[in-house]
Image (cartoon, rainbow, N blue to C red; front, side):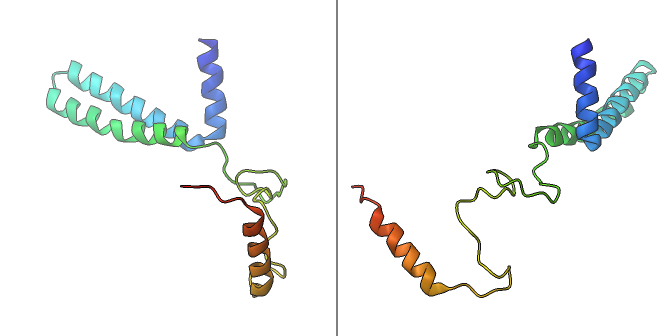
Length: 119
C-alpha cells in the first residue's frame, strides 16, 4: 500500500492534470455504483460509461514521456531540445540565410567519406 501511495504522490506532483482526471473518473464510477445500488440502472450505466473518458485521458497523459521540454535550459545533451543533434545550426540566428555553398561542400565531403553498400 505504501508503494501505491508514494507512486500516487509522485505522479500527482509531476502530472497534476492526470491526477485530477483520475479522481474525476473514480468519483464518477462511484456515483454510478451508488445509482445502480439505488435502482437507477440506466442512469448508472450512463454515468459509469462517461467516467471512462477522464480515466482514458488520465492514462494517456500518464503514458506520455515525462517533461519533453527543457525549461529554457540547454544542457548540450541528446534528447528533447538538447544540443546533441549532431551538428551546429546556422550561424547568425534563425533569420540568417544559410550558406549553401558551404553546405554543398560539407555534404559532398560527407558522401565521399561513406562507403557504398550494395542493396
